Image: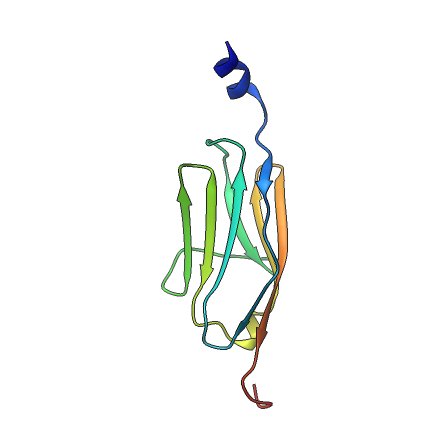
Length: 104
């Protein structure tokens, strides 16, 4: 009976995204944990643009509850707001990419 009640509850964000500062050329990782597996329509965004799994953007999921975005080899223009969305669940954080020289 408890399992049935648990399954019927709407998922909530247990641990949201955290602001991240990295240097040019490094990787930035964002993790969002939801209360239970099965959330639908998971999407990641950077400044309003949808992100897709490719050689610089790694999107993964563990146990259906821990959703991770890794941006590899970041540049200054990657600075902005990262957003995790899954249905009505939303979590956002800032990504600040710091240049090594004033020319960046």
